[in-house]
Length: 202
Image 1 (cartoon, helix red, strand yellow):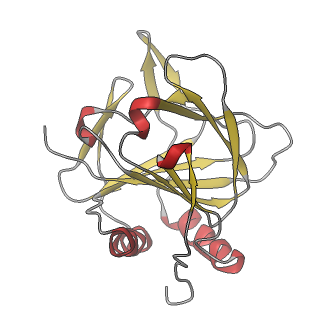
Image 2 (spheres, one colour):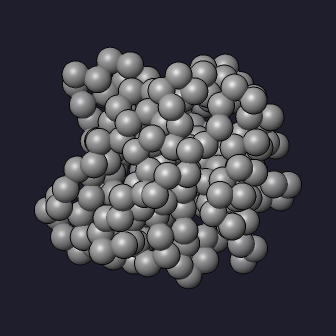
């Protein structure tokens, strides 16, 4: 694991300071190494969610890891955290050192190609607290991060997320903005996304 390290350069400030973007937290070769480690190490599964009373297959692969006893409920499903993998635990520790946070869980998403996607949502579940701060690390294929204001059906903008980049979603963002990862037919390679968060007991 000593072959990679984060580069905490000053981030780009977006959405009036609610979103901080580190375009190159990892150098390309280091991001590629980390991607390969996680691709093999994480026990990827395709889950299901309940939307408007109907169960749907999630259009991506997922895994949920964290401290013992950590649970997370969204879209009618409760996820019980698997133990940290060695690589995920080191990443979490480094992000806590970088930010001063006490992140204790990560939702891992594997988008196998441009047909895998994530619909519009805000990360505002009760377990995340009143004003969550969420860190999102991207590895692999570049994908677009779409944004729109809450209450609007109109997309406000797109941010291409490069491999090795980090989004730092600041407190307050989830109250005002929704985000998604739309389909992209021309994307043929996989992408791994790790969203680290702090889960609080209810």
